[in-house]
Amino acid sequence: MPIRAPHTSLPSLRSRLLIAAAVWLLGTTLTAGYLMPSFIKTYLVDQEKHQLYIYLDELTAQIDVDNKGNLIPPRALSNPRFQQPYSGLYWTLNVADNEFRSRSLWDTRITGDDESGYAGPNKQSLIVLTRNILLPELDEPVTLTVAINQERLLKTLNQLTGGLWLILLVMAGGILCLIWLQVSWSLWPLRRLQNNLKQVREGETSELSGVYPAEIRPVVDDLNALLFHYQELLERARNHAGNLSHALKTPIAILNNEVAHLNVQERSKLEPLLQQLQQHIDYHLVRARMAGASNILSAKTAPSSRVDAISMAMDKVYAHRGVVLVNELDSDLQVAIEKRDLDEILGNLIENSYKWANSLIRVHQPEQTSESVLLVIEDDGPGIDDDAYHNALKRGVRLDEATPGTGLGLNIANELAHSYRGELSLSRSQLGGLKASIKLPKPRN
Picture 1 (cartoon, rainbow, N blue to C red):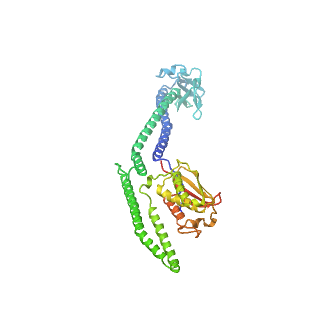
Picture 2 (picture 1 turned 90 degrees about the vertical axis):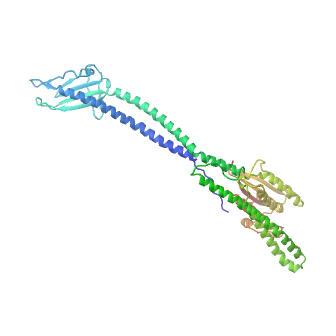
Picture 3 (picture 1 turned 30 degrees about the vertical axis):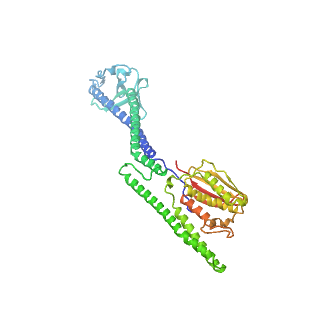
């Protein structure tokens, strides 16, 4: 018997779409949050350098040499900050061992280099531009340096970065909320389809109804066609089973009566053939009825109450054996099987135990999962050989010809369980007899 693969579930479509959107937004936000401040800083530094080039050109224009070949100190530049001590705007002129400085440097110097950065008064971080020029009157080149304090620029950059992160986070949150609304709205037809399927499963309706988008409508139409075809096949199978039963019942009864009047030798030839014929008819009638119920999707039965009902009937039939059945099933436990089919399964298994038990039959539920229930029926009878467990489930196999029966009971129970995607197995009971373990599906919520 094929065993159903364990049910595994993937994240919902909504979760997958939202996770993908969140990952994309996170990556985009982080990339923008780190790259844009760099672009802004580059822009601000370029603007400062552009202004410094203007000052550097102004300083270059003021360089002059006297008649003795000495460098004449430049006049005050146009920006008054060059005259204010530690104002953040500085210039220097270096030629040989001589150095001229702006008043803003006061008694300090510009220190550092391109690799480690430049520092000015009070350890100010500076943006520095330098230029070397050659004058005909001088043997050494003149080095011009213009610098500006970049702390105000960095403070402005920090403010812009904070505002940028706030804008990016608000924008990402807004986009994520918009995507959530879009996904919810887009998946709403699937939610309605799920509710319709639940109504079909619970027997409230026989088909899917409602207006669906063009992408889902073909699926709904195919499901409705499948449900209709399934119900038609079930009804047809039940009708054929009933018609066949009525058509064959009378001829077989007449044949049995006629055979009973024959002599022993002739009767011994015909009775086994009639019994085989009856077995085949019983088997295939049950197979036709096992096609399922019209409301199989909404089937829901409490096995505890069915065990009690079957036990009461068996107590009357097998009263001479003095067998006691102990029902340990929870009265609230339910399985997703139609009542008549569950009676067929449990009835065959319990009747088999009544035939062979010495005094005790135990029905209990050792375990259950979110999807299935395991029911166990065991007795204290002689049991069967270990190598006969598999054969006992085959059609028409009787392990003891002396005991009345058709050899169909265990096979019918096995195939009925399989038709509901269940599973029946036989093993040795701790009571000493046969242990029948049947795994049945639970109703879906």
